[in-house]
Length: 84
Ligand SMILES: [Zn+2]
Image (cartoon, rainbow, N blue to C red; front, side):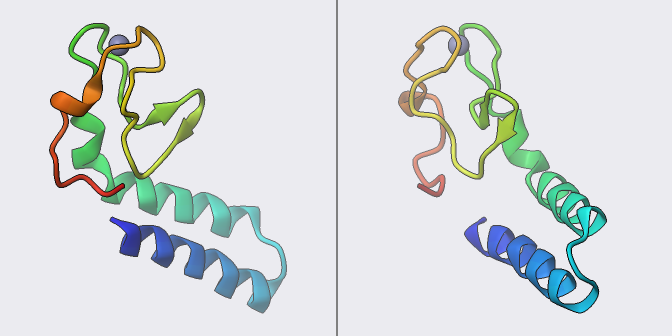
């Protein structure tokens, strides 16, 4: 998972240096991350259904330990081997 994030950052940095600042490259990298992370997007809060990987409008590569919407403890429902 962290490798995928590093890859996304690498793509952004590489394209940024080659063609200058590129919003498209940034968007493509985000899209890549989202596609790679589809399985993790199934981890929803058992109480309210909010995805554990969303913090506000941001998607992060590691789950919240506590649900940001209802405060449910997600540590006991999410896989122990999740990164972070
Ligand atoms: Zn919740």
